[in-house]
Length: 273
Picture 1 (tube, one colour):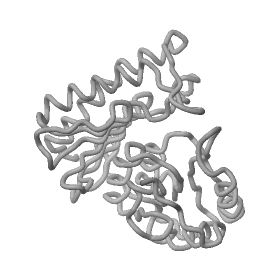
Picture 2 (picture 1 turned 90 degrees about the vertical axis):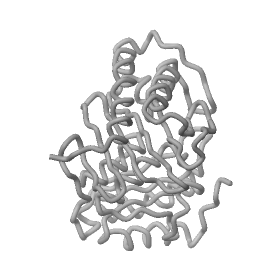
Picture 3 (picture 1 turned 120 degrees about the vertical axis):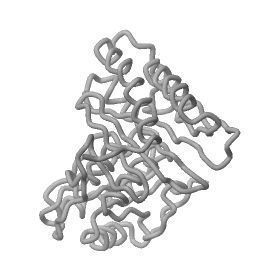
Picture 4 (picture 1 turned 45 degrees about the horizontal axis):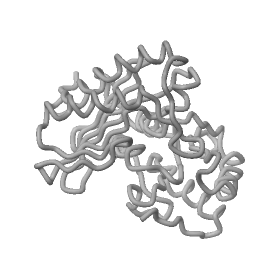
């Protein structure tokens, strides 16, 4: 049985407390107050309540740590070496449409390096967690990336840009060859869970453009600790800055990256900064 560190217990405990209210709100989603952040992007009272709960609980367990919050932005802490990166409700659109696929994502960044992460799916009660050097787990079970070597046998996940967001033409160029080369492409709308599923071997790979740090931070730790490869489409480690992510096992990394790169015509993915 896996032994969780005190840090993971703090993060998991905060997620479970926030999830209780999320699940109640999910049952009464038509009653929620919703505002529009941007084209196709929404924030509900459920997001805001969950974020407040997470911030309060994490600050109790690790006082002085800073925060990078999806809704609240950057909050400096007394401890300049540690900060939590938090998405209180990844999959808000799913949540607001009554689709039971969403998650809470929390990562810890220490001196610029991601060292721990949890992705909690409250509907399925699956707690994906990982800590640098310790491995990756779902609840108490150790997880590993898939062992598939052939793209033709693989299922790959992605995120599709929507109204007002992303380069639609570029995405369609990359989608077509992946459709032709694999057993299937899935788009479930929750990047943190997509990465967790790669770590657990449920998906064989995942790529997406224009993600935010809170979408991917915990998932990066999970994939790495599950023995996977994760980088940008040029093979570098700019994911948190560029928002571009490719996650696979070691066998599929090069063929999938080559497929995507050729589809893009060698076009570099511009950084957000």
